[in-house]
Length: 364
Image 1 (cartoon, rainbow, N blue to C red):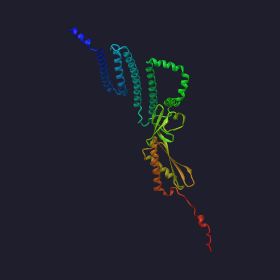
Image 2 (image 1 turned 180 degrees about the horizontal axis):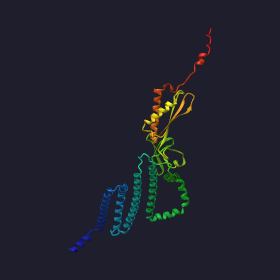
Image 3 (image 1 turned 90 degrees about the vertical axis):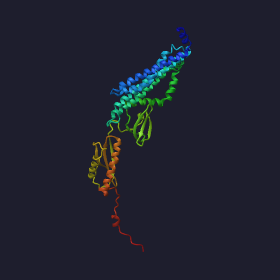
Image 4 (image 1 turned 60 degrees about the horizontal axis):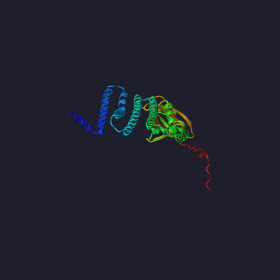
């Protein structure tokens, strides 16, 4: 009976045994991965911090591939595969493991970004610190992912003996090749260096209010080579990173989101400025858009036919300031129409000279 069983096992093809071993190993790896992350999910579900949940969520897929590739690599020497094919599979598995480790490292950078962004929400009233942190983390993550990708590609290329020889040849001609590549990649390199400068000096941050190329909007995205500005009418202005290092632009929220707004009104010389000033105080105090800090009215110019009145008001951010300016302008115009219509801008004509001038005799 034992001899018959041994003969039966010996009659089984080697490839079938290898396939069964691989299948069993992969199934075991997947089952172990599933159990591990189910337990981890239940554990982190009882914690308060969000970093545990983010860690489990972002590392699930890379760890699954790592476990599967590791099991296959462990079973490969005893699989009975021909030497030439086994060498090719071994190299492919090493490449897959290297890529999976890089994927896991990139996922961990995303985990840190999610944790920091959740700790500093942008929807708070005073989000200056949050915008600084979001901008730094976005740029650091992109730089880290770029470095990870370069390292992974270098490690993958090092698994090929031919690539090592190519590398030696390239080093031999690095002088001319480096000059040519440097000239060709100068715009990309300048934007990359500008991105590093922006991450740490921060002339702009995520959600900053800026005026770039005559357009008013918010910094929506800071990429590796460009910045996306969301304009007030929902258009998107894409600007190279180097623009914010080399050219001037306006940042309305560099230090704080508070901003002053001006409203110009033109009236006749007979206007009672004190009454208009009191009306301005009444308008802004009744509005939720005013932050209670600045409210004033001055005569800033005396033109040929009108006085220029400038109202100065403040708000907690640029959007509210725009709405407050429009509201104050409308209310002041209505005030003039209802209370002082004679003080609206007018053109005067003196007819006294015309009346005193003698009339010419009628023609004969």
